[in-house]
Image (cartoon, rainbow, N blue to C red):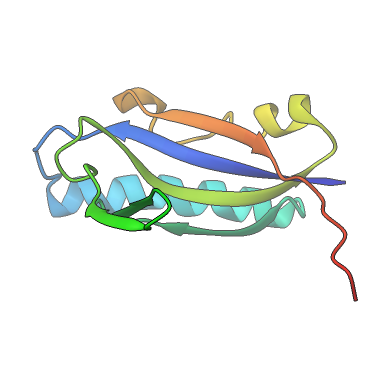
Length: 116
């Protein structure tokens, strides 16, 4: 069994959902998480705030990330367990934000043996 990271990318529209819409959206997310967990596929995950910092260069320059102003943001991630890319992709079938233009970036986690 391999680990895969699912990164959730969506477009910020500037429109906030109503409380009723937010309940519906979150219900779909929780249903998907529960389905993955019951199948033994969900490992972990978190939502991300739209702001952040970017570190770069040999001097480790720190700048505010363009996340809040950008059109597309990474809104969260999951770590899942799957046999291969095909299964990992199939597990994304119920991703709740496809209808609003959301995308799932699927990346396999590289195993690195750490010295003792």
